[in-house]
Amino acid sequence: MAHVEIKTPKVYKSTSPFSHATLTTGARIMHFTGQCAQGLPDGRTVGKGDITKQAEQAFENMKALVEAGGGTMGDICKIRIYLTTRDSIPAVKEVRRRYFREPFPATTVLQVAGLDDPDWLIEVEATAVLP
Image (tube, rainbow, N blue to C red):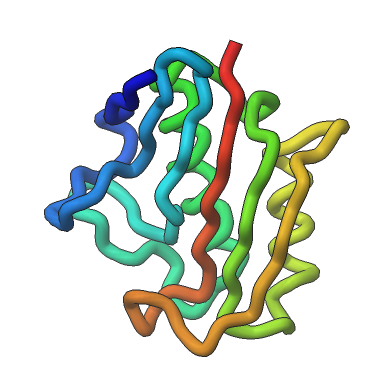
């Protein structure tokens, strides 16, 4: 099995040495790099100080990537959510409900001391099994 990079013009192009998502071709398993509130065209932070807007942007990036790989949000089976404060959990749960339906993906939520950019309040990584 090999893996290929999944790209889409709906997600900013990173200048860092990573892929936003890769697809393991034989098993059709898609792995997502942690998605943050980085928007088009240049990856600048969307919604500084607003956890709802940042969560929406992270999930919109994820949605664009899974669709570019040939899947849907329903194919995502595991997500890991990193938050800089526990106070964000209720807002993130509400946003997450707009992007996922039952059966919901297995989910881990972690509070972290900080993320790569000090303006980021959330980072979401995921795994999907595509049809």
